[in-house]
Amino acid sequence: MSPLEPEELLRAEGVAKTFTLHLHGGTRLPIVAGVSFSVSQGECVVLGGPSGVGKSSLLKMAFGNYLVETGRILLADGERAIDVARAQPKDILDARRRIVGYVSQFLRVIPRVGALDIVAAAAQESGLDREAARIRAAALLSRLRLPETLWPLPPATFSGGEQQRVNIARGFAGEHRLLILDEPTASLDATNREAVVGLIAERKAAGTGFLAIFHDEEVRARVADRIVDVSGFANREVA
Amino acid sequence: MTLPLLSARGLSKRFGANVACREIAFDLNEGEALAIVGESGSGKSTLLGLIAGMATADAGEVIYRMRDGAPRPLSSLSEAERRALMRTDWGFVHQDSTRGLRMGVSAGGNIGERLMAVGDRHYGRIRASAEEWLARVEIPIHRIDDPPTTYSGGMRQRLQIARNLVTRPRLVFMDEPTGGLDVSVQARLLDLLRGLIADMGLAVVLVTHDLAVARLLSHRMLVMKQGEVIESGLTDRVLDDPQAPYTQLLVSSVLAA
Image (cartoon, rainbow over all chains, first blue to last red; front, side, top):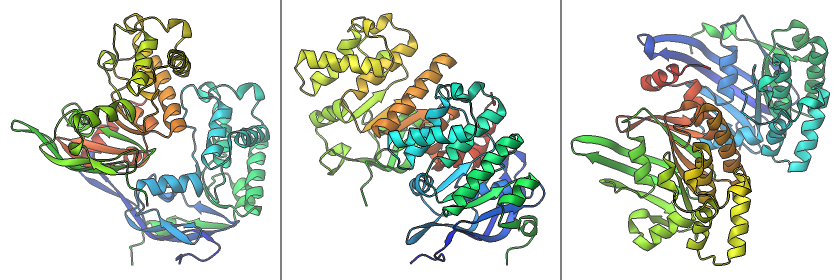
């Protein structure tokens, strides 16, 4: 039996993290403590609070990219739940293929791979066949208004905004029921921001849950169902 | 639950008073790429030699799940069985291509030789496979009859890869596969390897001191120092949130390009 409620996609319970900087005399840098919240189907939960309060670190922990020191982060997987804090690497990789996607602030460029192939590969990884993956990739890139002449080219030479649209398309290309977004609209103009807001709304309507950071007030107001203020957790001692 | 493809248990090796590997244990699953990183002298190449059966451990064992599904300790294989494994189900990409290629034999012959070793005797079919693999590793077909001595460093590495993969192995060992190559040549080779690993569902044990190579090619990572594994985990987790003091030092010592 899953410890999660039927509609819950993610639940963080008592999550705490401190960075230990061994190269700087073992300085301990407390990031967050006692963080608990949950994300349900079709819901967009936005992490709020000033910069440096640990929002990005929480997203990275939920994706298994940062170690969860204390507490647990449960991801719904059908009848059961995966605790990211304790899962084996192969289970986290499996969860990233099937359950949870991530859109970072910047695209990590892979030499020589074209934009369309990058997006299609993400769709294929989550289970689509080659043809369906390319069709979905093309649809997403059109929707995000990336000029078709750029599709076969590696994004290394693209502008920041163009790279970021490839990054967003890649994040949305899979079948993930939970998407983690780290300021995906930061480098986009108004029209492209609008396209991203539209994509989020559609996926929400289809039941996808979102855990996100948006500094853009307008975007946040339009997509957020709930704002979890991380600064409320930052200095609180674990009970 | 499927058994791991390969399990290392308590592997130890010393050279005189110097401990090269101390009680190393890990599992490798099918289709999983594992990077072993560390500086020179950390014991990573010794460990690779022990896993690949090229050196004998002082203690511990390596268990490999054979194609018939039966897990066997490598030490229990006869010499003939071990050689058969290395020619068919395993590949080994060396940093020094002269160790992985027959330098006096044509490129086509280098690829064909591995097929003949598994019993293929049909010249036309062997030639066709060699051509197909040269194309896959982006070597012009008209170079098929030239020996690797006439090839550039990057082409030799790609030929080594073709020679290894033609028998469709399940596991490939790589020892600094991009070491000594120009950066632009490295990028092309890495991209090729990345594609082949994913397409063929290869399991990989990759030894490298280059963290960028490890990030691009591996799922999981072991960090070695003075013969011991001091940190392990998901590759991006180890690189982005290193826990051990030595891993933090390694990661922070890389110049961002």
